[in-house]
Amino acid sequence: SLPQIFNISRKIHRCCLNLCKSIRMKKIYALLLLFFAFGNSFSQSLSLLQAKEAIENGKYKKAIKKAEKGLEKDKMLYELYFLKASAQLEDAMQIEEERARLREMKQSVRTISRVMNKQPDTFISNKYTFILKRIANEYAGIGYRYYYRKQYRKALPFLEDAWELSKDT
Image (cartoon, rainbow, N blue to C red; front, side, top):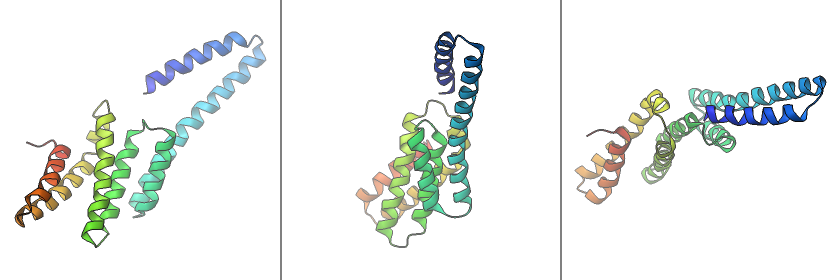
């Protein structure tokens, strides 16, 4: 989280200042620290912006790749999980074969369940509630189709996952 990063950077900063005796070395160190801080934050937001842009343009595979690339750098960037799940769902909805579509939809549910287990606060999940609702509605629809066909064993997992995602009683 952000406060932890600042605490760690303060400790590193104090150690380096103790090592740097001259004023010139302190200035060089301060500039390097600023470049590192801005570069790191910019690269995280860049992958987030690229994933959002790819989803808006309908390039879902590209959005998934951008989100995965950003998550390789920082697994704590929870917004990328939501964007990845949204892109996976939209990509799955374009597949015509039902089994392949269901397999791809399960990937989006796995991505969402990962972030719901890791995420300490609900701010981001409140921001992306529409994605949770969309996935839950699609899953519930599949579950109801199996239920009306009297395929109860197949319907139950879909309805349970939809219920978990929607937090509905």
